[in-house]
Image (tube, rainbow, N blue to C red; front, side, top):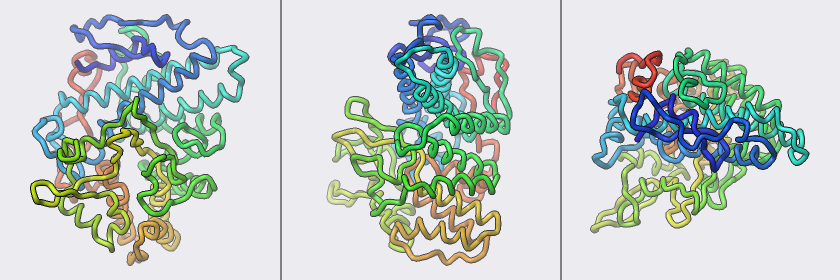
Length: 451
């Protein structure tokens, strides 16, 4: 049963020492379940560390399946090969407010927000000799980053959303909180990233936030806000760090044991905490369900030496009933089930900076950044020379570079080209619907137009 904002934000997630909520039969009268007293939840070094891991776990929950699907399936690289209506709606850009994936993603994201809120509220008051100031600051910086990531994703998915910035522990806490504007939502993302960058240490940790992690997301945020100069500045800071480099061959960034030097931030899984995304991509002969299929045009582009280059490694093939079947191979660890979710890669920072520089008229520098990504894929330099040619070349490079990641749909929406490229001319459909259950539970919550 799906949860609403009101219900999901106030019961205890005991394993992570952070608060979330189980569902109940009456949407309008939720009852707390397994509630943990606020003064007992996060009180010492051990519970603070557990709460931080819990916050990562909540982010991991929506990146495990729902968020990547909402990023790649509405685009043109992938089709849904099945009959489940919730996936078909996304594939056909015909979402409804009761779509299961939309509801799950929204719910999981606000659970992640609340996990962060609980730790942000509790950490300053903890006095434990086993939790030194440096570690306390680091944990605080990590959850500010995580809250920024979630609100950034909520903003680009739904537009302005309710900004919940304090722990929600009773059924009354989540009601009556109206939606902020998109600008206000992104302002909160910036505030959290600014705080995170101040608190986080330098370092090369790739599955927990460090300063460069916050800077990389900030570069992406400025790109979405069309703030070209700071987008260039923050991408440059990440690119200039000796902790990161583009790895070759292309497939190396997604090869076990993962955490390659190209990875700025990824979410780790293990056999006991499995990522089963591979199951949606592999054909049945290989133990999968083959729910997501690269479309013929994407297969042709990835296999074209002049377009895909070594990124053809994103594809694999097998013979089924005498026919050659091609499938997506980004998530391939069917036995170990430990494929990470890729959130921030250095290749994106190069393409962010390339786009920002092209917008600023720095065409030579923009071409150099684009060519860095192309060279890693074994491609010749771009033939683009004008600003318009270069911007289209960057867009197309992103389409191939992040073919099966949560990128393409949001790229076309932020650039205003979803209508031209995908035929989604009703711009009201460029945002996802607020889940129906949440609208029922909170009369002050307004639906996006067109739903």
